[in-house]
Length: 345
Image (cartoon, rainbow, N blue to C red; front, top):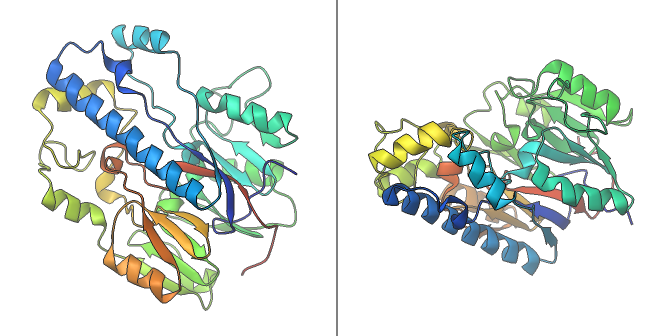
């Protein structure tokens, strides 16, 4: 059996990678107790939520794999030298994607090397354009994001934007996909998996950021549910978020970060955060099969839509999505689903 096999986002899930955050002890060296405690709380709760996500996925029969963490001693040495903390292996969907029976790695994340080596040793095809001797910063896929690719069986949508240029799309088409695929351009200004998500054939979630898509033409006859109000705004109202303090870039649910913590994040953790005010996490989900989908928070419109289509929405909370700018889809990367290449459009 090929260890790598996934042509869609909805065929029954058999194996998936769930990301990992640093453990709190990686930041024991921070002298400011307020900063240290707030950061360690975020890390502890993030791993707790990812552990619960793993258990939920396993309950439905899929195997869950987790990335490694870097050597703590070397990591702390780098921080004390003022280099800033690199992004943890939290969002594997941004760095790699399974395209049929091939796993494409577009960004360097050494913490995933061990898993990818296992897949290769088991007979799977892992493609890295960065060469056999290491990651080449000058390679054509440098700074690309796998989240800009949406698979619909024989049809593959590429979000040509700042996160995936047309020449990078062409490289993937020429070197990974075969002539049996049909290629579509989808302009969503990056991170297509947070703009539209297919729950099963005929059933599609989209967001207010789909203005440059022509979903009616691309998905004729499908029932499209467009989400205008993200659950993040309700979370901000309930919590203690002060927009003026960090205007839309990141948000810690349920607390107001101290000035010291805000300065620390904006100085040393700039690679961790995005711009969460524009992210619609209600679309960023993981489909287990055509009857079960995992979301990170409750959204009445989304859940009512799912139930109309006989889909059970499952909540696996990610309390700090609004800090990391990573939802359920971002934090997971499917490796194997049951089924093959089919035509849906």
